[in-house]
Length: 347
Image (cartoon, helix red, strand yellow):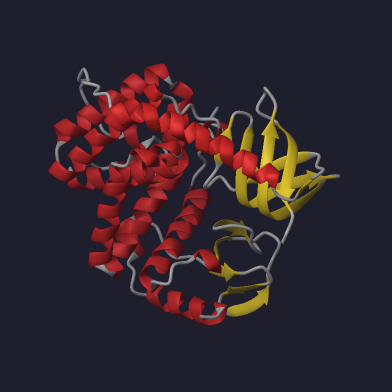
């Protein structure tokens, strides 16, 4: 389906969604679907604006616009429409509130350099299993257990928890909105999405990408609060993290070890190192820059001081921003500042 036809199909499907039923005050906004050269916005095909670079939001002639790269949209129209709603919710979030105080001291680097150790993953896995029980059993007691394990993690790994809380608040909430939009479009697809989320959260492999994991955990937290009939307006208003919206009495948690976690940690470390080695076995070039402004945080592979990044890196050269597409390796110093950038040459 070409860009314009896809845009029209999604635009028509959006008419079937009651946005304010999902979140009070939330309404649809302009959206754009783009490829490397063209974009469709408000039903019109234009040359792709430079600010349309990711599945995100962009400032376009004033108001924020939800943007999506067409090749990343699924073939299923309802799922594609729900993903557009996800990005529209970001426009609502960032247009409505300022998260500056709540997210103070959080850094994307806390996620990029997350400590995937046996202890951290064991604690995180125990935490999420309590959350799954809370959702499945509609149990406030299990949700208390979930929050109690999180308290242990908060005391031991505060930077990691700040990153998770921040990602759950921004992306987890948007994922929840995406799922609730899908529920209105096709309830069976919604249930399949929830089942897939729970299944993924039970898979140890998912725990080696904390950003993606936090999307699902945040969404399941809000779905659980729905089941428990707990109000979370303070989260929607950007006044608190999701985990702070439920008052509870601490329960000393029982932490169960998983024998496969140790092997998974070792295996993942070896796989990541091999992926870095494979990158540098191919034809690559060094990119000169003054500053790395940003990069696609999804699907990151890290080994020690090196990050493999796909699709997008934004750099600054002589005061100007440049958007680069491709596959990259970023090398960081001890202060977690990018000091070298390499790109695979186009074949």
